[in-house]
Length: 254
Image (spheres, rainbow, N blue to C red):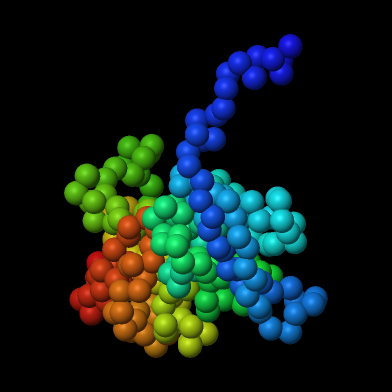
């Protein structure tokens, strides 16, 4: 009975979308087998509304279940599926196949600058170590005046609103050529999250963070290449935030 009902409904809307063949070339690496990463190509029949993440799912679910990659929400919120797609850092769940040149192979590889664990998975601990080093949390020893909340004007909130959008995907940090070559550099994401609290009128730890970032591996290692801004999937003006932190350090206050 149920199957009859389903048949009467006809094909799903997704099935009515024309399909095309796309070649995905994925940089694979299994530490138990491979000495070096290797490129493996897959020919897939996909829809124009599909994303790179859908193509990776198709490979894993229908062709090779050993393919390893991270994903969680699949809607551009968690940031876990950041990877290099055609040489650019992107979120696989936000990159539509139709926005790429599908007449050419699509190259997919793990983020650069972080230790490779397997296939498209990198060790994120160095990234999170830098994030924790800038103390990305509200420091406020005094109690709110009314005992309930710390008030803030819209103008005060706007001062740091852009940098609250960070989802810690590491796309900006792993696109930075300084981060690739300098294992001690904090990286753009850590500085962005420091910015978020340095310019928060409710916070009392701005000087602590500015002292941390005034170190030789802090903001002064930035070479203003704008790679980080281009890579950010949330559109954060990363390079501008780093420049604002530099200016605050030189002024001695936010």
